[in-house]
Image (cartoon, rainbow, N blue to C red; front, side, top):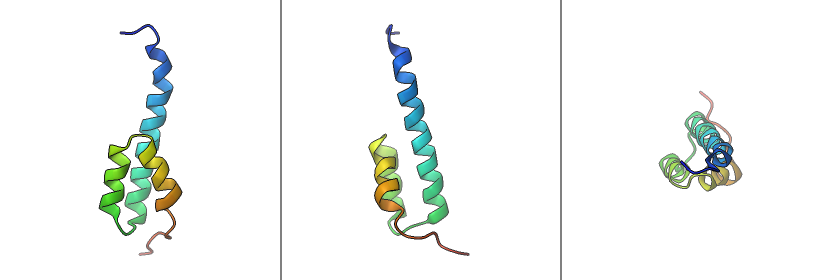
Length: 64
């Protein structure tokens, strides 16, 4: 294991936290293009969740 591996732990934690919160929010809101947003969130590591929070949350959540 590389000597400076511990420096990546905060970045990995940030990535996982963003991923989980973005997917939970996506499932709660169920916007149009939900499947596409899910793919973007999962495949594009840190950028995908950031894009979702910046662009994908424009529509209000569906009310039951």
